[in-house]
Image (cartoon, rainbow, N blue to C red):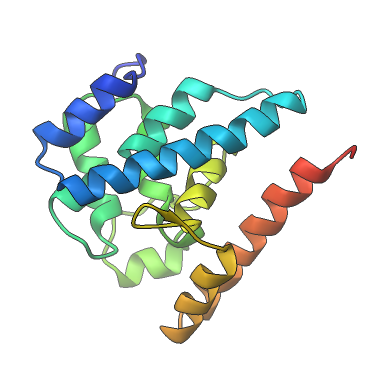
Length: 176
């Protein structure tokens, strides 16, 4: 794997080369815009943040939608990213962004490779959270995502989204 992060143009080129639809690319751009906006708030609070990683990771988070629109797009995206020799940090964002993370038990049910699919780094959490606040290209309240997950009887995923929201907002509210 390479350690060199793709810039915005390179990330968009990777999406196009892998035949992501214009709708998926527009969604990824909207997520990247929100993720960068959130990152700037973290940066203003002196959190050590890798802005280039957040932008590239957000742009590429749905790379696997070139192959499937199921939850498995995280695994497909991880595999495409590996084939593209993208840095491990990008691969982690791609594989960990679904549903505010997938537990090892859920991964086993999905027949995913044994791995950690829960966002770990602040960059992974920011991209994951931004994705939960974008539907298509529109910003939505995180509560909308939580309600959608609850309607689908995905209570654990809904709770993880709530916990991620609380973690992000609590970090941003510190020292106010």
